[in-house]
Amino acid sequence: MLDRWASQPVEDVADGLILFDGVCVFCSRWVRFVLRHDTARRFRFMTIQSEAGRALASRLGIDPDAPETNAVILNGRAWFKSDAALKVLGALPATRTLAIGRIAPKPVRDPLYDLIAGNRYRIFGRTDVCMIPDPADRDRFVT
Image (cartoon, rainbow, N blue to C red):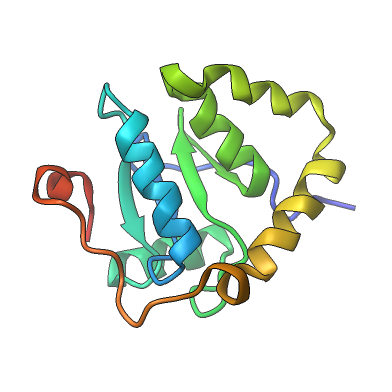
């Protein structure tokens, strides 16, 4: 059985782009975490709710109306679910050691990711509008 969420090659998408659910409080906290730890300013962000985000989500196989995963584009590939989170953590100097989580098999990691993602609104909440970045970080958000 093919893994629907296996990494896939992506052309014409900037390296370091994180596609996320902008109305999800947990996802917005993840973005703020990355902003705080990304001293090299490698990552940029796009909400799934934006026009461009909806188009990219659809292209990557993510339902923009009910996203099951965030995605990150690194080195010409799209990464999903736990792979995406671990790729980002591995790219940030302060959290690089946390990427050791990749030693756990994907069939173990992704069900945990799914448990959190499937309950994220109930546990962490959701907003009516996407997060608004601080003025110093606005240039890192793609619309």
